[in-house]
Image (cartoon, rainbow, N blue to C red):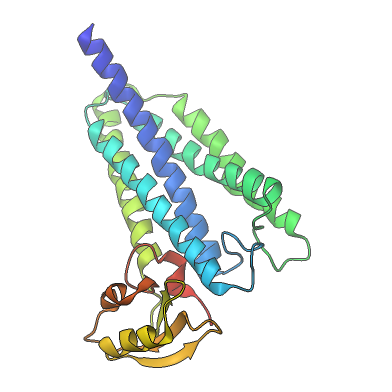
Length: 261
């Protein structure tokens, strides 16, 4: 009885690890491709669209949430390392389901119910892009994932190796996507810094000077600045000077690394 309960709990963690990893991959895919590279939208593009501080902060904390979900998925994957043999397809299918579910939720909730953004904000026909993304990255992965999860491997040596490959690949994909989301664009000599609301101009100038920085640009509020800092200095020091987001300095910057001024 106890062994059966343990196997059931392990299988449940295994299944949910796939759901969460797939969901996080969906968020990373959306953030890296649409927020950072193509810059088709921000998370809250229709809310205070002229306030770039608000937009990049929302994108950054969105990425932070994806890291939490990914970390939870990886922990569940490790905790279910004794899952029954022959469950590689189940994990693969659950990852696809999680990936597709992310895009379905994003389409229905973000695009149509709340209207906080569309896939391509500058399109004359945004519904076309919404439906295209929903079909390619939402519905199709859901169907493929359901078919894969419904056809479990046989418990033989080959399926056990397949299980190990799926586990390793899923882990590397999530870690890789997380690293790409944090990695600043190549050839960018500038650092973008967002200071907490209400930070005085004197405090900001002191912070820039503390890292040997050169002020290049600032927005009207003076709280969003672009600076050039020496290579030997780290932007991490700015967090101790009142900054809440620093490009290239890790969580929760995300899309902040790619902001165009």
